[in-house]
Length: 308
Image (tube, rainbow, N blue to C red; front, side, top):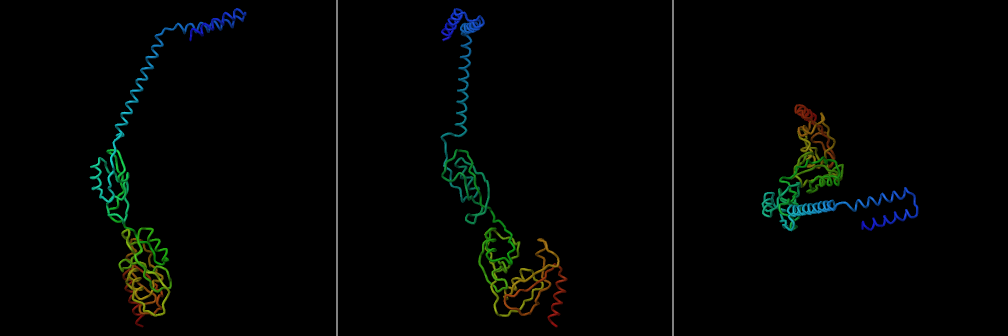
């Protein structure tokens, strides 16, 4: 091919001279012809050197690619698969033994609470049972809590029945049953109970515990006697009032309580006093203190007032 190009340019030079083309143009064409001639005369050793290096580069690339493919096959265990066993419902120790027997291992990623599974057992696994995985791979699990979570009971007194029920369910507690008592505030919560005992707000209950709500209904027509409440705690007084058909009215503290001192308060004054007659469902107001001496003095004063 080079020979043909050289011959063509040489002919073009002669033609230019024949046609009396400018000397500058002829010199340019002659210079180009000289370059082509030099290229044609280059030793074949240079071409051979380039060919050898190119072949060597191709061989090295093939070796590197082959090595990468072999490494990937070994790393990914190409063609080897294991059927993942069923481990939900097992304890962590049992699941680890089963997985180890299948050349897999267990990783706990989270814990939760479910009343539909035994405590301390696997409730969810990834990959799922009967799927396929490579040997020596992890199976990620979610464990059911070993103990039930303790939930503080919210303040539900004077809250509507519907709102109280929704609140209990939203925090993980259950509504066990509903009882009704006469009250000036129908459809409101009068008391919270567990196994017949009144509960204070903040009492910690196991998740899933059923709570009884005492709900107010319209007042009756009968008259009832106000019980003695002095010296009682708030929950004791509420239970005593409900038992006779009355409801808790306004309550105040002589000193604003804190969560740490709330359980120490007792009633030192009640209105109406013990022995008064009220229409069924009527409220009784109370005042509370942590000062036992003040509670005793107030009790004596109310006793004298009742005597006279």
